[in-house]
Amino acid sequence: MPDRGDLIVELVGRLEVLDGLLSRLEEAERQAKDASEFLARTRDWQEETVRTIQEERARMRQRQRALDALADRARAAVASLAHQRSLPGEVQLLALELQMLDTAGFLSRRGRTPR
Image (tube, rainbow, N blue to C red):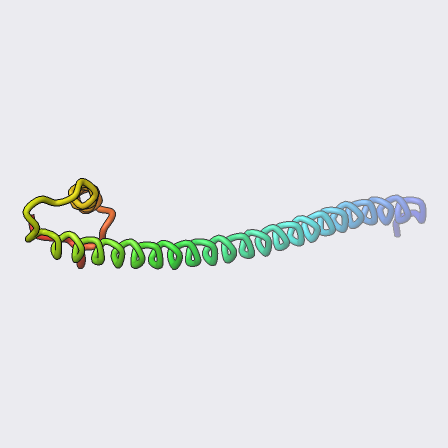
């Protein structure tokens, strides 16, 4: 039978090992909690980014529709004045600006005139 002192030394050694394992477990739990919080913040950021992108796309579609409607009205005005003997400079400039917007791709295909 081992000596009582040897048993106490062995018990102290095992307690130190258990304490080390417990410390590592606590550190792993802390890191897991930190990672979980980081993932939650990242998910929130991603969701907010997606919402922002969707809102901006909606605003861009709305602006595109407004620009297309304006171009349609301007084309109609230019077309209605086209039978005039001479067009005022503003109308000629408007026709040129419409052509430039169309060529640059700022107008949607539905409103483009054939080239």
